[in-house]
Length: 260
Image (cartoon, rainbow, N blue to C red; front, top):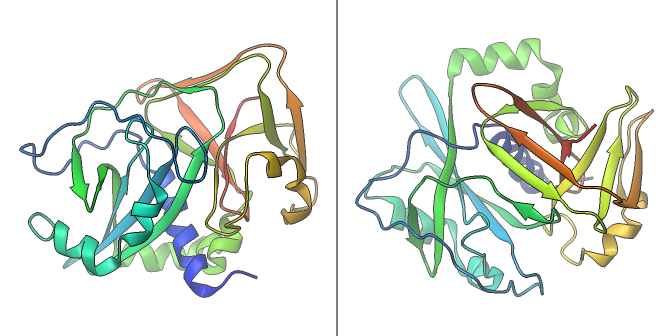
C-alpha cells in the first residue's frame, strides 16, 4: 500500500503526463534556452529526467504546472535530492505564486531514442535546468463534478493505474531492433510498451531489475506483463492535429505507451 504522500505524487505525475506534450504557456521568454546537456545520471544511466509539480490556487480553481528536466537536460539526481519545496518555490516567485510544490522523482527512459521536439525555454532551479512541459487548470466546480461522476477520482492513485489515458501532443519514440522491451498486455488485446521507469516507489529499481518486475505489479484481471527482444523497429509518433498517444501507468510509477 502506498503512503499518502506517494499516492498524491503519483497522481500528480499521471496528470502531468496526461497534458499536451508541448504546452503553449511557457515561463518568461527572457529565460535562457538550453539546447542540450550530456551528463550521466548518478543512478548510472546515460540519461534521466526529474519532475516537480507546482500547484497554484486561483480564484475559480486549481492550476497544476509540470516542470521537467526532460531528456536534453539530463537530471543529476544528487542535485535533484538537494531541492526542497521551499527552495523551488522561492526561485519561482518571480513569475508564479506556488501554493504547494510536489517532487515526482527521477525517471529513466527505456526507449532507444526520444525524438520529440522541444520548443520551450529552460529555467535554472538550483543547479538543474527545468522546462515547463504542461499545465492544467481545473475549476472547483469541474473537480467536484468529476469526483462525483468519475470513480477514478474517488479511488485516487489506485483508480488511475492500468487505466489507458489518451494524451494529445507531439511525441516521437523509437525502439530499435535488438532492444529488450517491457510490455503490459491488456485484456482487450492492446499492448503497451514501457517508456520510462521510476525510482519513486522502489528506490533500488534498476534497468536489469525490470526483468523481474512482474511480482511487484498489482495487475488487474486480464492484464499480463512480458518482456522480449525486438526483431524489428517500433516507432510511435503522434501529432496534436492528427493523432493521440495512449498511456498506461503501473503501480510502481512506470509509464507505458500503446504500441499495438
